[in-house]
Length: 426
Image 1 (cartoon, rainbow, N blue to C red):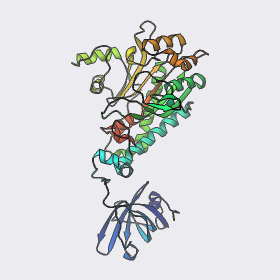
Image 2: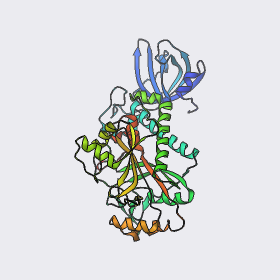
Image 3: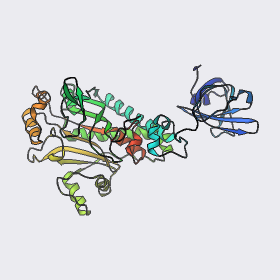
Image 4: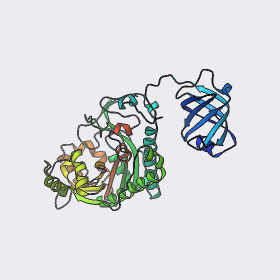
């Protein structure tokens, strides 16, 4: 039944009898000929039915699943330059009509409706383009790091205490104890880096922040690295190289998807400009923004910074300690400032990182200054008591990066099954 070839291959095998399978996109009647446009994961083809006895007696509806056996022939009429002429058509499964969500190329339903019927929305050309690009970003991320000597690690997602402090944690019962969904793989990737030296992970993380904005979700995927014998500048250089490599790869291998989305992807030039936090505050103040040293940047201010810096991608570095996690390494001569950075791309923060504290006594001190209890982190702290080298790392938000690359305004479009304050299904 499924000894078939993909449509893209069938288009190349002109004159050969093959079987193709997929979904009905649309049908059309013209005098004594019926046309079926069908689709699979590799594209669309027009099936031209001249022998109407082959056409299903009950007709065909959009998204019906069919198999068609026949031959591909050259055509001056069809847009693709080929048509498929069938010897047999089999209906594998009928689709309910009408469809609850519009998946036509020229018209899409409201986002909430699309998310409610996500499995159907995946079949829409724009949605397929988004996740094809996201898949390429992930594959390139993994490939580049593996080729450059990084080991992929698997961190736990159920933890006993907050990864980074704060109250934005999802609590859950864990037998006789209380546990949490991990905010970050941070502590575990550090433990791995001080033995394996260069590691990376792709992992879900959860934050119980009560945001309801176009750039936030409560469950996201992070792409992280951690590297021993490294400081913040070392891993900033890795970040800019891998980001440009990922974007170059998308531009080369997802050109059709970018075209579907109407995107002209401009890849930033290396190296990225470095702007200190203090310089950024001064630039924004001169531009009339109400901000003082110690404040975090709002999303509009991040976009404003892109205009002021004049670069599509750049680093904001040397942050106030109060704005960063307890494990951020402070400057010796200025302990209120830490070796931390954000990467701004397309006017939005897509990544943040720091040089980590690898000295147990200093780590206990900084944990206490954050109002946390060092005894809750003893397993983590003890990891640095047995010959831990200096190390640093960063994290990229997969959905947020996808959002910038694909030009979408809402991060929910770039998450297969988004989780926010309102949405737990599908």
